[in-house]
Amino acid sequence: MFIRAFLLAMSIDTQEEINAINKELELLELLKARLLHRRAFLIETLPPVTGNSDTITDPKTGNQITIRRPHGCETGEN
Image (tube, rainbow, N blue to C red; front, side, top):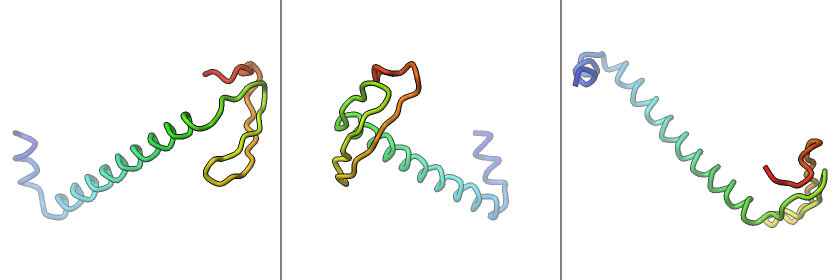
């Protein structure tokens, strides 16, 4: 309740800034959702990596991709 009263007492410029920040936060949430969706898609569609490196085909573009794992991650598990 105090915050609402404080916001009402602020100038219109500040309220516009708050609205702009809220819009940016909404856009960041949308971006986060899209990235999480893309991550889930990749986890479901790409085969697991075995050994230190593996070559896979990107299902969307058909391009060959070589994935390299740091030493100690030979199993492809996280």
